[in-house]
Length: 201
Image 1 (spheres, rainbow, N blue to C red):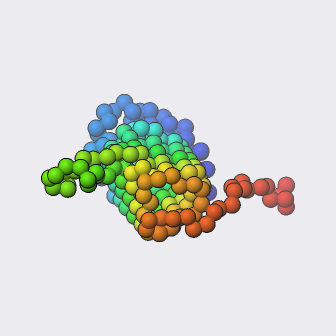
Image 2: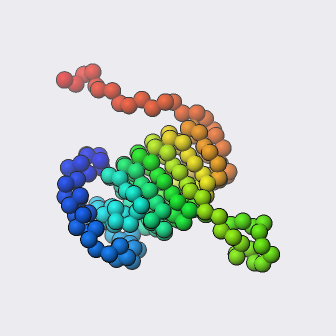
Image 3: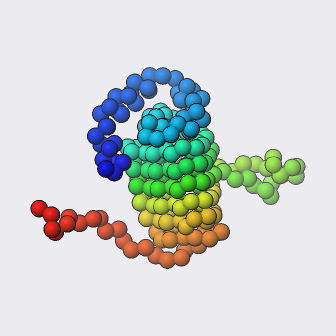
């Protein structure tokens, strides 16, 4: 059974639990997230979802955080529905991160929504002014393992980023991208939703 089907069955319980947890102060959830990063199995996934519902700016149905996912600046992070974020990813929401529906982010990816203006100032570079820019990942996109996505990157719906690629600031039309920096490798066919099996029924 697919995860979204399991979620549909458990949705009434999840909604009720989420509302009850919403009565607790938000700082409790922020303080305990690092502990939840380590909780395994479906139990850990369920807890992390409930925590994300409390912490994120928005969080849709059936959002999966696998173990070891580190998140900062939750209040700037928007999550759609049917989102999967796999092991040991890092999301820094300082400049804002918006992830659409039906998105998969494979293990060891980083989304960093800020950078530094290295041309400004005359002191140490580590003290250069910070620039915050939102990362946007459109619906129906796939990010493969080891990808780095930086501030100002906007991925259109139905975009695929190949493993170990580096996605810099810019607008990315639908297609398959790979490399450092990531460049368009090929266009992708339009989405065709699954048709009923003619042999059934």
